Length: 307
Image (cartoon, rainbow, N blue to C red):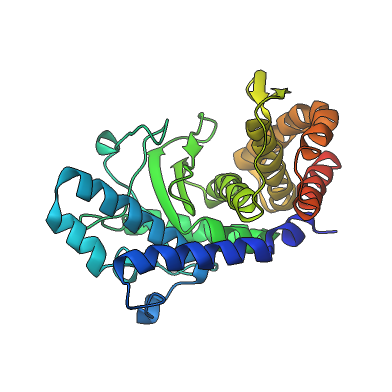
């Protein structure tokens, strides 16, 4: 059974994307029920959803700052200028950018720096767009195309690193469909991190789409953080890391040399971290009222445990 492919195709998330996008568009274009086709760079419903949140976030910040020029730009660009910024990939048009890290804002809404598409946004250099394109293609070839198509629309490349360095990556709930990630000069590694962060975006959407709120009263030991974590954080780890394990196991035979050694060590490490979570994962799943969502989360966790 291909647990990830089964899990990602989720009608509840698709409905969430359509409904929220329509509500955001209604604020900026009250006479238009949906975003118009932008031609060669027309976007899917999932991409519309991601870009609409960039527009909403950027317009809100501009309004708070009294910046009418930028606010009006968002009103005139309900797709955040996607037609100009997009790069073609196996999972659809993607926006790949490399903003100045020293200028990434922080706010009370996010513990980590973030970036919002706006009038000054430019696409990443060609070599980095090609790296990202290859990463998306690799992810699709290993069975994660649906995940990346719907949950990694905007890729913010952060710091260039060397293979073996510690790589930071993250998402924020206010910008669904956006991934922030360090990168090495290898699409196989970038694809792994895209799968991981897209998994976080998927789970956030799945919980919202099914109106499942997880109580923070119970805490569980996280082998990844080596500390007790609320059920929400523990569940996210027990979803995103298994996805990267499944991806790594599938891509491993296509690698050689230092990359093969790196990924083999990563998979071995993740096996040892995931194994002791089996009992607690079952307890966390019991906190989720929606049976369909529980089954999807269980299937991926179970497949990763069997690797």
